Every structure is written in C-alpha cells, then in structure tokens.
Length: 156
Image 1 (cartoon, rainbow, N blue to C red):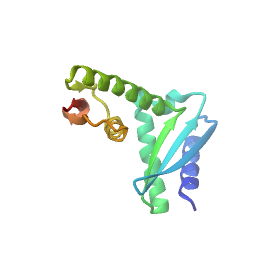
Image 2 (spheres, rainbow, N blue to C red):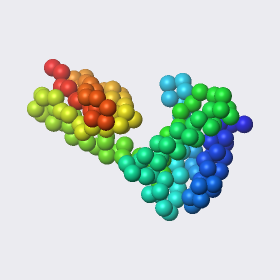
Image 3 (cartoon, rainbow, N blue to C red):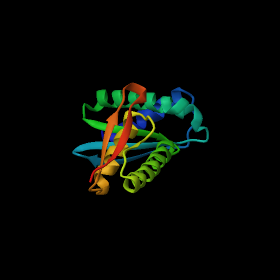
Image 4 (cartoon, rainbow, N blue to C red):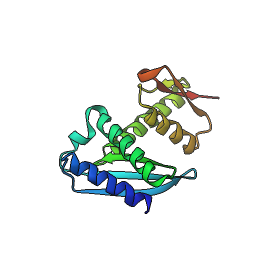
C-alpha cells in the first residue's frame, strides 16, 4: 500500500473516532533531500479543535499519525500536518517578518533578532535565508528551550 493512502486512511479514521467533523484530507508528496515529505491539509469548518492552543493539537496529531503510519509501512518519511492552511499562513508570516529583518540588517548593518519560535519555524527561517541567495546575510540560533530565537547577521 502506498504511504500517502496509508496516511489518509489513518488520519480519517482518527478524526472519525475523535468525532471531529472534517470535509476532506488532502495529501501532497514531495522529495525533501532524498526523503519523502507528505504535506497533509485537513479541511474543516471548525479548525480550532484540531489546531489547539498555539498549534499544540496539530503537533500531537501529526506525531501520532506518523508513528502509526511508520509502524504500518516501515518506510522513512516525514509529514507536515496542517488544518485549513493554518501552518502555511504562519510560515508566510514568519517569512514576511524575516524579510523585514533582512532589510533592516542590510540598512543598519547590525544583527537583527527574531522573536522566539519553535524548532520548525527556526528551520523555515534558516532554510529560507540559505536558499534565497543572500551573500552577506547569515543566521544563527541563540538561547535555550522555548526562548530559542534566530538572529540575522549582516556580514561585510
């Protein structure tokens, strides 16, 4: 059985058992450095229960789906679970803030600090800057735990 079909079946069964109404589950696959990445979006009229406080429910559900699917498929893959494109909107906001901080770093030639964020969003920032082709902009993560944040460093 294909991994995307397995993921969809697992997630739909979980949602039904949790009695969480949903319209559909959409899965898109892509290659991420040699590992399959499955982007899963749940469309629903009541996204708040699936999203939870600061996305905690999405993270938990994502972990459960991945563990169950991995046990069934024995394949190496990653999943990114989203609800009504909540995470995508967050990513877009983080990228927008990052672009503003890059411009400020270029203008002032001083290090700019982004607010604390999850490991996932720090990675989004690091990869965005690395792939955007900025010759004189580098990133570093500083701090510990929930207070870890990305700095944007201007280099001459």
